[in-house]
Image 1 (tube, rainbow, N blue to C red):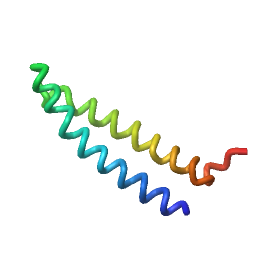
Image 2: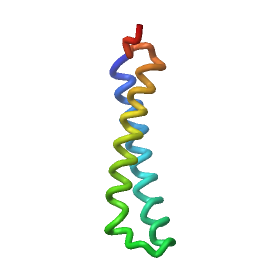
Image 3: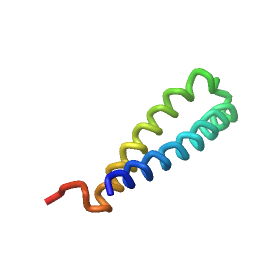
Image 4: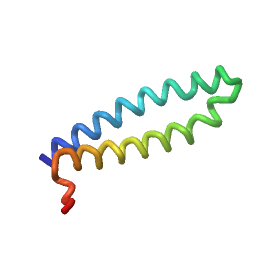
Length: 68
């Protein structure tokens, strides 16, 4: 069960990273902000937070989180 949670969390994180990695630079370019400078911070933070949330959320939903 833990392997399934890891696998699904990793796949969702990879898909989210690809989506965010495309959308943030395009959005910043439309706002006339240099995407090469600004997007790396936003992409990293979004990917880390959403990956962590996906893992913990899936662990809680599957019942392996160990909550009492």
